Length: 258
Ligand SMILES: C[S@@+](CC[C@H](N)C(=O)[O-])C[C@H]1O[C@@H](n2cnc3c(N)ncnc32)[C@H](O)[C@@H]1O
Ligand SMILES: Nc1nc2[nH]cc(C(=O)O)c2c(=O)[nH]1
Ligand code: SF4
Ligand SMILES: [Mg+2]
Image (tube, rainbow, N blue to C red; front, side, top):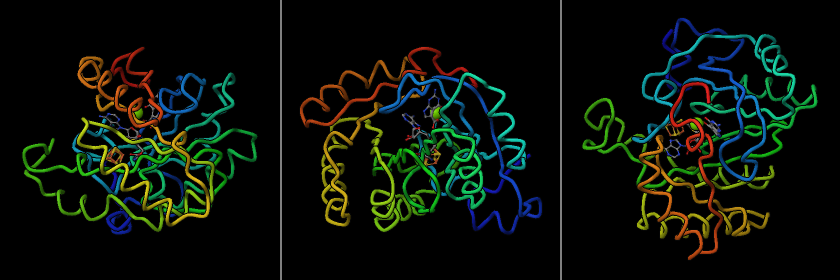
């Protein structure tokens, strides 16, 4: 069923309940991105997002949010059915638009799981998060009319206004072990990354090392990554940041549930 796309809309959604989470998919795979790439993990993907990146590889959680409302018990049960996994990745959509994500993380922590939250960094929540994998959205993510996958640029202004929230971003950096994972389209993204790092370093008590900064090539298929990965790897070397592959795309291309 369709899921309201952000918290504000969701409260108006007659289908919304006070309990549970809108779930787009739960699957077992290898963590494909970031410092934990290669680690067997169960992915819980919530539906609904407060942003609209033109390149979003999870279209059915953002541009056309779909999923089923599920209670936390049933989600935890499905996670536990993948007996080999001790890591859980909560992603979306934007998982932190949902208050119930906190309860899910509490339950998973109580069961002994390592939890990673994949987030755009615009919403802070207090929860047992072992790794906050923050992917702040750059200007190059904005759905301008010529790049809008759905309409005619209706989301451009809202996305542009909301894509960075320095308060939420810096609170998260101070509260959790963090990696900053920037989606890079080309070299023109680098000045904005440098500027965002200056701003977050000025706003936080925690040291943000260049080693915590990862450049990830934009692309949801192998073919698209063929056009970005070499350049992004060179940019990481040039600037002293890390490079992260998109291992799942290299292994399984854009197959569902990977
Ligand atoms: C679908 S998002 C969900 C979590 C959260 N909304 C966010 O953006 O961080 C999961 C990850 O995929 C990245 N991503 C989405 N589309 C991508 C693309 N076309 N190429 C590279 N990374 C992409 C995001 O930046 C984020 O790191
Ligand atoms: N294998 C795999 N690794 C991932 N790491 C982050 C993902 C995400 O969509 O948040 C993701 C994903 O969708 N698949
Ligand atoms: S913030 Fe994440 S889920 Fe939302 S549109 Fe961007 S990439 Fe997709
Ligand atoms: Mg993904």
